[in-house]
Image (tube, rainbow, N blue to C red):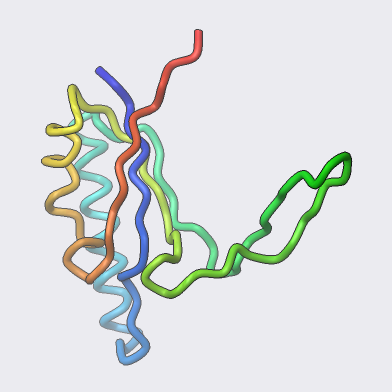
Length: 116
């Protein structure tokens, strides 16, 4: 079976959510991830911190490190999962009931190319 990187963009937390509502959302993510793990399909997954991170580029022989990348809120990368599936179609089925999609976020699936 192939491995797929599932990237979570946007969605999730909304400013109007109470702490109790946010805790409920977090619990849904945990339960969904646990169901993937119990099915033997989850290899890893984590929420990313809320900071913008660092962008690293090479300009000639110099390394350029800047804050960012900055993006619109719908484009912010919030987390990832590494899952196992037989095909893209099966990977889509595995993520179809993700709470991330239910809370207005989007997901990108990328197959991992094994480099022997």
